[in-house]
Image (cartoon, rainbow, N blue to C red; front, side, top):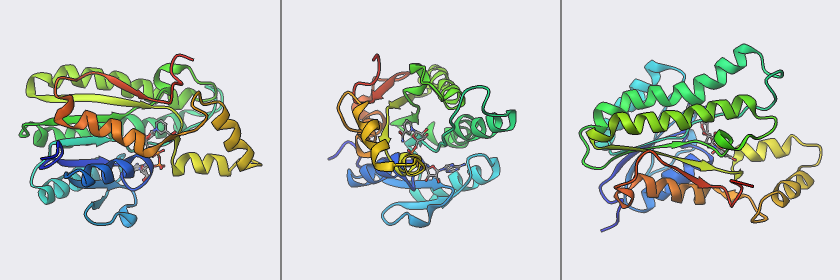
Length: 244
Ligand code: NAD
């Protein structure tokens, strides 16, 4: 029997990139998986897509209720939906800070709140948050994004402490630069996308970007009973970027 057999999982932002790779990996390994996304139209069976905006509490509650009904319960929540932001503190006005915080931080809070009653009923409850090396690395031109991921990191530790005695583990992954549609869009916006990609790869200690499947592998580990004694941790999936 696989470590994922019988697990029921919900992945936010699961229609693209890291979330999609995670949903597919969990399903391949035997879990039943539902996806919550702004646009779940590309989500195919056996995954079950639910439309919701993590900035809209009512839509999150509705989608979580539908997903849990479909799955027959919930063991795993992957809080992954997120958006990027570039620039220093001088570049983004207050409303942009509120907008990105609303998705990256409050989106996780809303989804977690809606899922906790169901996770309490699980014998193998786990929450995995997609954080980033931006939480701790001090990246240039990423003030707002880094601040949201710093909040995700702190939230992970606090949630782990709050829910450990209820049998709910909470961990996060800290990816480096991952080859997802999001990064593809950033590269496409450069004057010479191929040269920009080559420069980005050259900055990686491994000489290549992290794949979405590699982040999915770390999330799957933290979501499964294989990591049953692990809570309140951040697992770096950054090809050695951390500490450089
Ligand atoms: P992506 O853009 O490929 O996928 C993000 C998904 O989230 C999309 O399907 C999108 O529709 C969904 N989404 C966005 N806003 C939403 C909302 N308000 N409600 C519901 N769904 C919403 O991005 P990705 O690169 O796979 O990033 C996923 C997560 O990984 C994000 O939290 C991001 O911060 C984090 N991350 C990415 C990288 C990277 O290099 N790609 C690095 C570190 C961390």
